[in-house]
Length: 220
Image 1 (tube, rainbow, N blue to C red):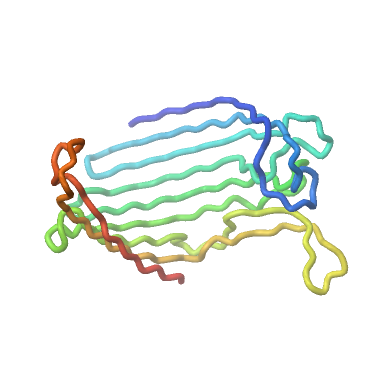
Image 2 (image 1 turned 180 degrees about the vertical axis):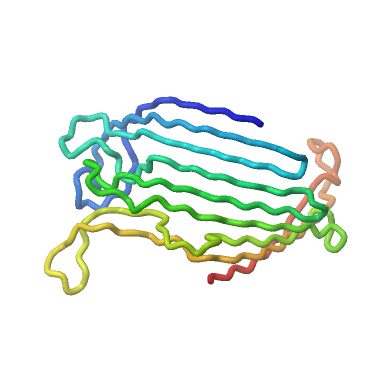
């Protein structure tokens, strides 16, 4: 089993962020210094030649370094991200992987009084089969299922004032971009070898490879 971790700190003279022009900092071009203290922990375990398990965790401590009374939190900077993936490989022509992804919550405004919704947990699965005997040694058919359990989660959230038709004044509220529902994608990749004009920089003119790829995506 391989395991490693790292922590470091850094400072930026300005932070690139989503801006609406309706809040402090948002929409302004003022240079705002920030401090970051992220870290990560990565693990890989290969219990057998055909089984691979990856587990990763990342965290951050992101803050504005000025003394603005509005607060020090950097909007949309999530606190933690994690993933676990189990991969079965080289089972004859078959391979498969299952991945869980955890996205933590984060402050949506500088004083941390509004945060994104509860952390989301989604799962993706991928199954592939090589098609060497049918279409060549570099060809494969893949089936991907994203958001396997069809969870209702958000890819990103913001907090700002907006005004809908019929409202007398702007209202400050959370705005979200919902994640895609369960999605199935089938991809066929066909690889081929070709012989280009001789190139002195290439060891062999038969080493060049090409790909033709097509996919079908179904939302369900």
